[in-house]
Length: 190
Image (cartoon, rainbow, N blue to C red; front, side, top):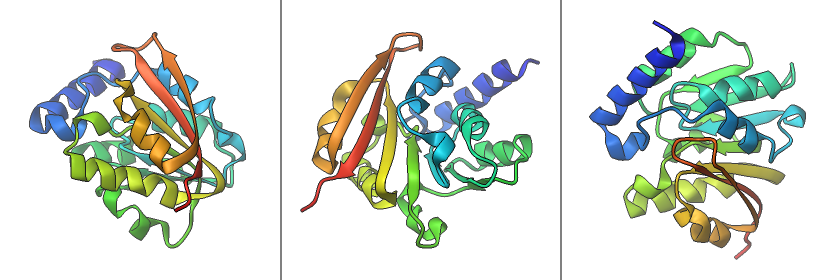
């Protein structure tokens, strides 16, 4: 069975088991992931964090852009998806963490990322959890870092603007459904 079909079935199974947590029936397209990653300087990053790694669509593209001495911490809450990611992407730069993105700080050892890539389905999450996860984004970034967020709705834009001084947006229609891409910089002080 082709890998794309296998990944699609795994994601569908995870979605059926917990639709609010997974948030998507189909994997995000590689075109949308590339367009999102083009909004940050991944090749110069020392540390990239991915939240909601899923089947690894973004993980593979991040690794393709990442420098030889850089590191990628990919967080995935679903144990089966995290295990498959570890098995399929044997790369010394990759650390797969099976945990909630709420606990990100405990996995970074005091480090902060140059780029945080969020594949989390913010609009399908309970409001309190969504706020706690969004609060993690500026905390996880180094000064000058960029948080990249992909969503299937623009509804999270206001919440991003409350947390970041700069939010650039782009829509990529070549995804099903169309994807809204956000590049966030400069945490709001206060």
